[in-house]
Image (cartoon, rainbow, N blue to C red):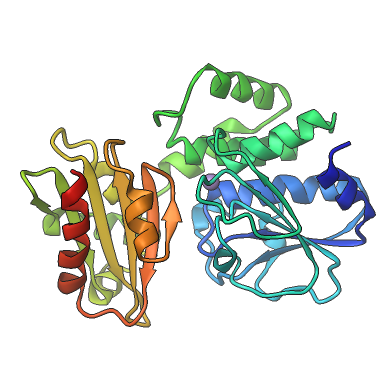
Amino acid sequence: MSEIIQRISQAKHVVVIAHLNPDADSLGSASAMYTYLLTLHKKVSFFCASKNINKKLLFLPWSEKIRDTFPVSADLAIALDCGNKSRLGVEFACDLINIDHHYSNERFGEFCLRDSSCISTSQVVYNLFNANKIKINKKMATSLYAGLLDDSDGFISDEVDGTTFALVKELIDSGADYKLCNKFIMKYTSLGAFRLKAIMHKNMILVHDAKIATFCVTNDDMKASGAAGEDCESVLEESLYLPSVEVALLLKQNADFSIKGSLRSKGKVDVSKIASIFGGGGHTNRAGFIIHNATTLEEEKINILKLIYKDV
Ligand SMILES: [Mn+2]
């Protein structure tokens, strides 16, 4: 039995943690862990510091159990898909198991299981279950499939290989409701997202011989469209399909006037390095950061572009 499974077996009340503004991988991995903990007859809580969870993810098992207050009686926490401590959005005293696949994971917590060869944290969780002969039931399989589907961008990202599809087969054989996941994660849209897409398409600026696509989204754009924060990301990713574009940059104003930066790359430029200059992190192809005490979107954009120009 692995050290982590052993530590879990000793706990009385375990809280699973999905990161701020959770995606399908973080919530799916946490959901699969939640199901496993229930099979052990543990007291389990599901924590996420963000109040508004993306509606397209509410089909995931146990999403109705998610709370934004940290359970004080928990004696063990398990963070899923959280690259650094600030992603947890909470501070607490109990032991922490950190399960992740981000290369830039800061290895916080009493136990850390980070495997950056995995496409998703849900793949790391699957491997943990598999290595410890833990049976994957239908709920677990659906949750793990959701994470793999989302982080592989619908199985088209460069990291996808035969192992990915072998894992998909395993999960479907274990009862994963893949049709439900495909429908919600890949196809769901809202009126707000639809309207924001039009604004972003119109405002995109290509610079540096059209090698860099840039997007600035203001608070007013968000209000006018009625979109949610995460709705910006899909347009950002779409711009990478333009043949000349190597890097895509999105700067989005938050309600508190801090700026959220998101970077995507075809692979030639390691955008996690650029994000880390601003205290953020991520993967080579996909990274993010937050600028507090930001000036204007345009000024910040100029500063960031100077850093990208060096690498493109
Ligand atoms: Mn992930």
